[in-house]
Image (cartoon, rainbow, N blue to C red; front, side, top):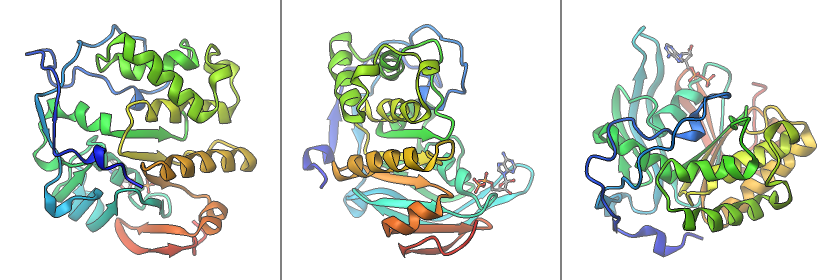
Length: 287
Ligand code: ADP
């Protein structure tokens, strides 16, 4: 269940004027593998007030209305898509390659902007969002990728801590937060190991810990089990289910028909940029 304390209408935070130029705060979750380890971004840079979703959409993690995404080359990757995800939901996003799944995820994390329509995520209206506000959105969303995207020279502990360091979190708050999420994903004993010393499942659990360390409203997992064998895939799914039970909304894009069919959760199916099915049930197609 959702903790009502997380639905505050107004949040206050200290302001450091000018500390957050557009695009200055990197999002470690979206860094490609091997990204050079850069100096820590400017210290605390949160606005005084963040407005949450209006009462009309209270209780929703995602609301997409009449969204079309046409890339500059003319390719229509999403066409007239409507999707509402209540807080606390667990949904699978399925569809063949090229259906528009990645494009949808990119719109949700504001890597891309919708050509038409409304995108609201975790209380933010992404259509009217300024670039400098994007890091605030990304702190409300945890992202997990198929290829883990860990920093290879940092330990498990440092990979997770880095997500807090780049947002200027005080050191005293970092250690307890990292310890909490490493316990959650069962990696306390591996905290000092580097990604090269981990199994695939442990790497993905590290990535999930990093995604959870900001206590996000929504976890978006893009093919999180795509590089893992079936047994380890189930461990990762169980972890995502547990995170969901603790109140975090989970959206998982997957081709794993066995998992989708077994869990009987809400399945949103995309084909050619359109939602062709949105119901509780199985996988249905051999994508
Ligand atoms: P999926 O994740 O389901 O495989 P994508 O969202 O990656 O699908 O792609 C949807 C469609 O949009 C595909 O036809 C793809 O070729 C196209 N596409 C994706 N990204 C771009 C881009 N940056 N520019 C032009 N076309 C793109």
